[in-house]
Image (tube, rainbow, N blue to C red; front, side, top):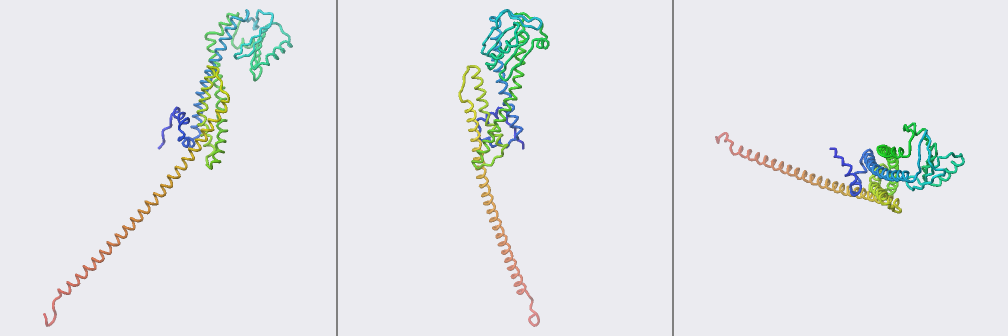
Amino acid sequence: MQTKEDSFIKKVISSIKDFEKYPEMAVKPFSKVLSYLIKLMLIFTFIVTAISVYKVSININNGIEYFKNEIPNIEFVNNKLKVDSKEKIVVNPNTILNLIIIDTNELAENEIQSYKEEANKYSTSAIILKDKVIINTGAGTIQYEYEKIANIYNLGNMTKQEMINYFTGTNLSMLYVGIFIISFIWLFIAYLISVLCDGLIFGIIGYVTALILRLQIKFVAMIKLAIHALTLPILLNLLYIIVQALFNFEIKYFDVMYIGVTYIYIITAILMIKSDLIRRGQELTKIIEEEKRVKAELQKQKEQEQEEEQRKREDKEKEDDNLQEKEEENKEVGAEPQGENA
């Protein structure tokens, strides 16, 4: 009979505290274990993405306020940006971008190159020019021309106030939704691949550990155990991300704790499997001994029945012999005299 599958929440709880269920997890189909991991990572990624978008929204709102109060009059006309300033404007917001350089004057190529060199000293930066914006993401440089952006988003001439109005309200909400969707997809793929790699690495470590303990466990089964063993470290990592985002709290050597907790779970799971196998071996020995005892009793009972049957057969034979002797004696006594004695 097929057993009812546990709910996702029960699987999470069992993976954290019910070590005695780890032998059952090791024999489950890999598809079910993978499905469990995908659900776990979907929840993990959703929360992490929400936190990231929340932090981005704070930075964007701060940027909008800075733009309102600190940036001189600015306008966008004929796909060109113009700021009322003869000198470059340097901003160090220390948010998403560590440096912003604004200069919409006519610039020579060597001046633009000088700005790029200055911007590259920071992990993230942006150079806002009259006809384009150059963004340094840390992984590379991306250049956007205003004319192309205007064609894509159907932008016309805009004053400073119109720009502020455009990047607030519904448009800002749609921006957050877009950031959330893109970030969620990218982070989910990245986190899932990362955890699968962790499961493979810890599976190898667990497999070697099991061999040292003279326990034969299939490598695929060990990967399943490793994935379930990663449940608590993943949730602790999520909690750490939340605390770090809200309170700017940092834990040194968190990665070491992540690895240590996972390995402890794997070792415990291996020992539980070994204990389970020993227990089953003892139970099997008891069953074999009980079968021998029952078989011996049945054999003894059978021999007793055969002896009883033999005894009854012998008694019946004796009774038959006695009855036959009596019949012969009666015949001799009851016989009539012949000849002269008649």
